[in-house]
Amino acid sequence: RWLFQHLTQTLDKRVLHMLSKADDKTLFDSFSINLNVNTLLSKEFLQFDASLHTGSRGTLLIEMQMVDIMSDFSAFLFARDFVREKGYRICLDGVTPDLLSFIDRKKMGVDLIKLNANGIFNNEAAPGRFEEDADSVKEAGQGRIILARCDNKLMIENGQKMGITMYQGHYLDTILAGINRAKNPPPP
Image (cartoon, rainbow, N blue to C red; front, side, top):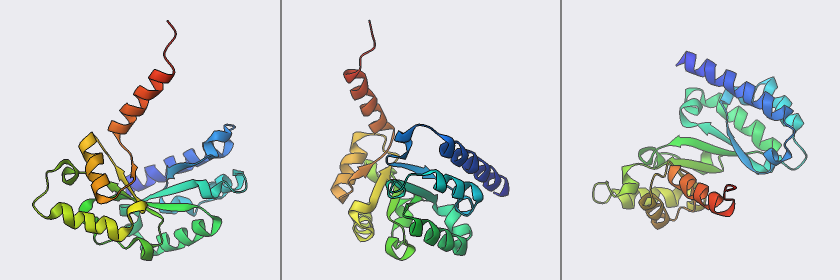
């Protein structure tokens, strides 16, 4: 665990360094970045923050892993308050349907929750389980959930039945790539 923590912090810092030096202004037009709690308290994050244009912080979503948050909750609270004060939005990442009923998004002070799709979204749940998870989604805020790891159309359809409106995953990437190829065919 400590080695993984060290490697993710090193990677976070390098990514922030590269983003703060980037000339591509489209990078700061609404994107998300997955960062470690300790990285948010580092000088590299301060340098990244200083490189942003006024008003662009509200378009950036900082994703934080549930495991990282729980390993030092007081550090998370401090980092959360620090980045929210600067205008960033926060997404709780790494949440499974089993955990969702135990999470109070509002009390944690996060804007969004990234829920990892699993068998429940593939009609593989025990009777009544889908309804329980739909209640947890409603409690967290249907417009505040991103259903991630969507590998097929059924997962999205079941997410829609729960009221989820934001999705990520290989299935969507494939569809978007097809649309992009249709709009921009390769030269003959």
